[in-house]
Amino acid sequence: MANMSDFELARDDLREQILSTFGYLMEVTDPKGVSRSITASVKAKERDGVTVHTLITDVALIPLSVVVYHRQSYAITSGAPAQGRNTSQQSQIIREYPMNLKQAGEQNGWSEYPNGD
Image (cartoon, rainbow, N blue to C red; front, side, top):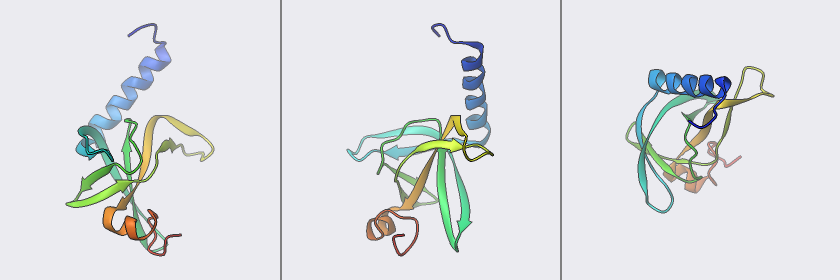
Protein backbone atom coordinates (compact mmCIF):
# COMPACT_ATOMS: atom_id res chain seq x y z
CA MET A 1 0.00 0.00 0.00
CA ALA A 2 1.61 3.17 -1.19
CA ASN A 3 1.98 5.84 1.49
CA MET A 4 -1.24 5.14 3.39
CA SER A 5 -1.59 7.05 6.61
CA ASP A 6 -2.29 5.30 9.88
CA PHE A 7 -5.81 6.72 9.71
CA GLU A 8 -6.42 5.26 6.24
CA LEU A 9 -5.06 1.89 7.36
CA ALA A 10 -7.30 1.93 10.44
CA ARG A 11 -10.33 2.90 8.31
CA ASP A 12 -9.63 0.04 5.88
CA ASP A 13 -9.26 -2.40 8.80
CA LEU A 14 -12.53 -1.19 10.32
CA ARG A 15 -14.36 -1.53 6.98
CA GLU A 16 -13.06 -5.06 6.60
CA GLN A 17 -14.08 -6.00 10.16
CA ILE A 18 -17.60 -4.59 9.77
CA LEU A 19 -18.23 -6.48 6.55
CA SER A 20 -16.61 -9.71 7.72
CA THR A 21 -18.74 -9.64 10.88
CA PHE A 22 -22.11 -8.55 9.47
CA GLY A 23 -21.79 -9.14 5.74
CA TYR A 24 -22.05 -12.13 3.48
CA LEU A 25 -21.40 -12.80 -0.20
CA MET A 26 -24.11 -11.53 -2.53
CA GLU A 27 -24.33 -11.59 -6.31
CA VAL A 28 -24.91 -8.22 -7.99
CA THR A 29 -25.70 -7.78 -11.69
CA ASP A 30 -25.14 -4.38 -13.29
CA PRO A 31 -27.50 -2.94 -15.94
CA LYS A 32 -25.28 -4.37 -18.71
CA GLY A 33 -25.70 -7.89 -17.31
CA VAL A 34 -22.23 -8.24 -15.77
CA SER A 35 -22.39 -10.13 -12.46
CA ARG A 36 -19.95 -10.05 -9.56
CA SER A 37 -19.85 -11.16 -5.94
CA ILE A 38 -19.64 -8.54 -3.21
CA THR A 39 -19.59 -8.66 0.57
CA ALA A 40 -22.63 -6.82 1.89
CA SER A 41 -25.44 -6.91 4.40
CA VAL A 42 -29.06 -5.82 4.23
CA LYS A 43 -30.78 -3.60 6.77
CA ALA A 44 -34.58 -3.63 6.89
CA LYS A 45 -36.47 -0.77 8.52
CA GLU A 46 -40.18 -0.01 8.59
CA ARG A 47 -41.13 3.51 7.57
CA ASP A 48 -44.73 4.69 7.12
CA GLY A 49 -45.97 1.09 7.13
CA VAL A 50 -43.56 0.06 4.38
CA THR A 51 -40.47 -2.07 4.94
CA VAL A 52 -37.49 -0.36 3.37
CA HIS A 53 -34.40 -2.47 2.59
CA THR A 54 -30.93 -0.96 2.38
CA LEU A 55 -27.87 -2.72 0.99
CA ILE A 56 -24.76 -1.92 3.03
CA THR A 57 -21.33 -2.45 1.46
CA ASP A 58 -18.06 -0.70 0.75
CA VAL A 59 -18.33 -1.38 -2.98
CA ALA A 60 -19.35 1.33 -5.46
CA LEU A 61 -22.37 0.01 -7.39
CA ILE A 62 -24.03 1.30 -10.53
CA PRO A 63 -27.65 2.51 -10.09
CA LEU A 64 -30.23 -0.04 -11.30
CA SER A 65 -27.90 -2.95 -10.56
CA VAL A 66 -29.87 -5.95 -9.35
CA VAL A 67 -29.30 -8.02 -6.22
CA VAL A 68 -31.28 -11.10 -5.14
CA TYR A 69 -32.25 -11.09 -1.47
CA HIS A 70 -34.55 -13.73 0.06
CA ARG A 71 -35.33 -15.01 -3.46
CA GLN A 72 -36.60 -11.63 -4.66
CA SER A 73 -34.86 -9.32 -7.13
CA TYR A 74 -34.16 -5.81 -5.92
CA ALA A 75 -32.86 -2.88 -7.96
CA ILE A 76 -30.26 -0.60 -6.40
CA THR A 77 -31.56 2.91 -7.04
CA SER A 78 -28.68 5.11 -5.89
CA GLY A 79 -25.82 5.09 -3.49
CA ALA A 80 -24.44 7.36 -0.84
CA PRO A 81 -22.09 7.13 2.09
CA ALA A 82 -23.91 5.88 5.17
CA GLN A 83 -25.05 8.53 7.65
CA GLY A 84 -23.42 8.66 11.05
CA ARG A 85 -25.34 9.10 14.30
CA ASN A 86 -25.21 12.81 13.64
CA THR A 87 -27.07 12.82 10.31
CA SER A 88 -24.97 15.69 8.99
CA GLN A 89 -21.92 13.41 9.04
CA GLN A 90 -21.36 10.87 6.28
CA SER A 91 -19.44 7.66 6.79
CA GLN A 92 -16.09 7.30 5.10
CA ILE A 93 -16.30 3.57 5.66
CA ILE A 94 -19.59 2.17 4.36
CA ARG A 95 -22.04 2.95 1.52
CA GLU A 96 -25.82 2.51 1.70
CA TYR A 97 -27.99 1.69 -1.30
CA PRO A 98 -31.80 1.79 -1.19
CA MET A 99 -33.26 -1.44 -2.57
CA ASN A 100 -36.55 -1.62 -4.47
CA LEU A 101 -38.34 -4.79 -5.49
CA LYS A 102 -37.51 -4.95 -9.17
CA GLN A 103 -41.04 -5.51 -10.46
CA ALA A 104 -42.64 -3.07 -8.00
CA GLY A 105 -39.87 -0.53 -8.60
CA GLU A 106 -40.49 -0.47 -12.33
CA GLN A 107 -44.19 0.17 -11.64
CA ASN A 108 -43.61 2.83 -8.94
CA GLY A 109 -40.88 4.91 -10.57
CA TRP A 110 -38.15 3.22 -8.46
CA SER A 111 -39.60 4.56 -5.21
CA GLU A 112 -39.82 2.22 -2.21
CA TYR A 113 -43.35 3.55 -1.62
CA PRO A 114 -46.30 2.04 -3.52
CA ASN A 115 -47.63 5.40 -4.79
CA GLY A 116 -44.22 6.45 -6.15
CA ASP A 117 -43.64 9.28 -3.62
